[in-house]
Length: 107
Image 1 (cartoon, rainbow, N blue to C red):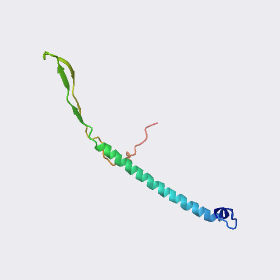
Image 2 (spheres, helix red, strand yellow):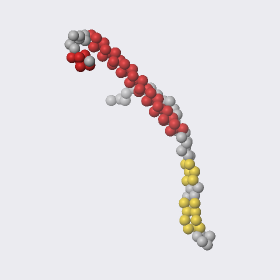
Image 3 (cartoon, rainbow, N blue to C red):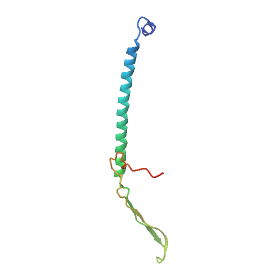
Image 4 (tube, one colour):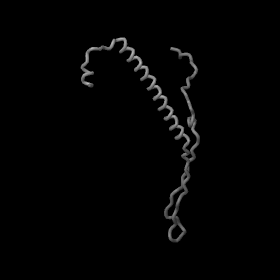
């Protein structure tokens, strides 16, 4: 049945119809790809917000061991700490920010 339909030459597609169908398909692709782009951008923005919310502060105590006599330290490691402060761009829904126009430099 499909072979008979494929070999059938009794009908034809007018060029105006094919142009109309191609136009509708291209417009649909543009709308669909734009929607996909916006969805991906929103997900990446959410991921960036999640990373920005992560508090990466830490605090570690040092360790030491004294010799058997207890009078001198045989080995030690120092403690360490770091405090994570909020950055300027954390969780900021920033668009493109343009500066004011300025005159050209003298030539």
